[in-house]
Image (cartoon, rainbow, N blue to C red; front, side, top):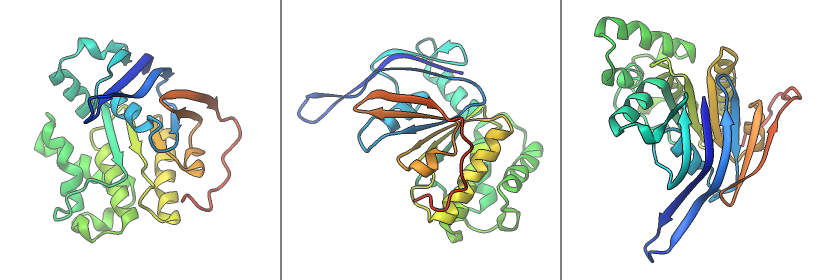
Length: 236
């Protein structure tokens, strides 16, 4: 699904001095994998996620998504793939607090070709998949942090994406809410969805089948997890 070769990303700071966030990263991710990308603050893990999810472009190197190079895709094509093939879950939820759960989950469909008659079932099914049917018409701002993150997952699912990108999804949650969110992502992966997670929390990362550690913009290690994950008692 994802093939990255010698990827670099350089930012120009105020002093006009280039800073390299990524320094020649090479990796591939297959369809159906659950991958955690770990690293300390400033390691480049979020930059890598942003490039993989088309929210940013690399300075150099190559990136193919589902066999097609992003260099061959226009901004419009990238936006179409992002809206139809990718789902996003962020640490800060990114919900519209005065809109209901239903309205928040429906938002991605407003930018698609899905007819209004079909939207209702898609939205209701997505909300049901995260166990929030009873909150469907409650304003998002009135929910707990864990419930907000479950709404964010439902919003990511409503377009039936091929891959879900989760950037520190438990970072603003207590341990029990974080566990619930990770178990939902684990369940979605078990049903065949690709999940790519960025986290600095070891116990959160251990939900994945593979852990990639990034340090100073390079891949420090890339390991398949063969042992079954132990039940998490604390995700913080």
